[in-house]
Amino acid sequence: MRRGRRMRRRKASNFRFCFCGFEIYSNFFFFTQREMLQCIFLLSDSGEVMLEKQLTGQRVDRSICTWFWEHTISQGDSPKLQPVIASPTHYLFQILREGITFLACTQVEMPPLMGIEFLCRVADVLTDYLGSLNEDLIKDNFVIVYELLDEMIDNGFPLIAEPNILREMIAPPNMVDKVLSVVTGNSSNMIDTLPGSTSSCIPWRTTDPKYANNEVYVDLVEEMDAIINRDGVLVKCEIYGEVQVNSHLSGVPDLTISFANPAILDDVRFHPCVRFRSWEAHQVLSFVPPDGQFKLMSYRVRKLKSSPIYVKPQLTSDAGTCRVSVLVGIRNDPGKTIDSITVQFQLPPCILSAHLNSNYGTVNILANKTFSWTIGKIPNDRAPAMSGTLVLETGLERLHVFPTFQVGFRIMGVALSGLQIDKLDLKNLPKPPYKGFRALTRAGEFEVRS
Image 1 (cartoon, one colour):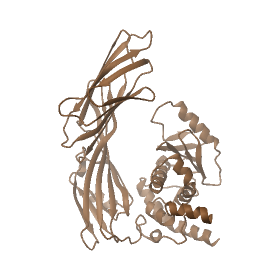
Image 2 (spheres, one colour):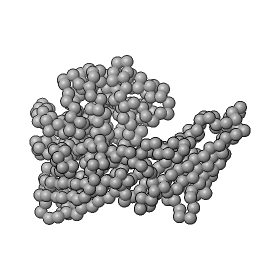
Image 3 (cartoon, one colour):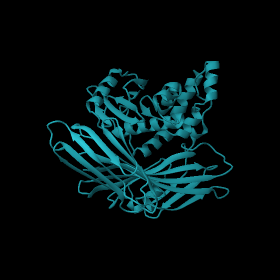
Image 4 (cartoon, one colour):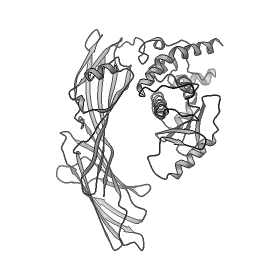
């Protein structure tokens, strides 16, 4: 009983700080007493219920998972399943991470982004604790998963979502703990003392960390989403980017990041540590960082005018066959090497067989009639080309459904949005730390239509 009372007092004292941080991160959602989640399920890639967590007194039957999985199968191979689904009895929120579906249920209307954001937080915390996400890891560490959910949500309301606080409350799994749990029979990783950060005004930071070498690294990680029509015209091109920080600083440092061109940013979204007034007034990021790696902000840059590479597909069909030719090359040289170039496309159902080869790279046939052309880096002496013949089904003279080509690439050392970090200032440190900066751009949903 003493343990239970202490836990309840801890949750009550933490509600303001941690939950307000969650509100900042989720665009200031405020909840009434009726707006709450009732249950969380974790489903495998085959639809099996790996974990069930009832959050309120109103129990949700597992039959809702059967309905959800049948609904998912009815959507076919569409990768864009709606994150919010209205079933006959519940509203469902779902995200997919590494083949695992995180499913939350409620019977009352509530801000949909709250449910989606909380599931994303759960997935991020589990990835942080377990190193990665897969079915075996979830089943091997189900005790820790249950303990984390107990602390992250209380009676259906998001409570503690900061990894630093959770790490002080629940020790991450390791081999020594697993051996001790087998010997002693105690499988719980909960600590007996209240973390100091729970009563702090900066609950996202570990209490008074100390490092022999202070260092902070800032990464600009961007994904380019583009649509190029069959005439080679760039219909849409935009960047989704993140500012990721890896901080190992002693004490309570105060950081300020300023950009050379912040006016290009749209749809900015911040970690709770960011002081929003500083950004609103001066377009600078002022914050006391969490300890370790975290996402400081995300952003979009819209209406870009060009892409770094071109992909030119040509398909001509006649007399029951279709000739395919695809050329790949550099359109705008970013000044850095473009590598990890891949081109994928799925053949229409009317194709009986295909024979494709390339003058550079390798062509492989994947599941569901999907061809993958792995190029890597573009050579200096020639432009990579793929060609071949598709055989149509009997009775079909010409191809009427043309495939869409999915392009992948990676560019180290360049942020194609043009965003540049001007400077990084640090305060409240005894000596200047090491500061490192990197940039990376990769393809997101980069589509070329034929």
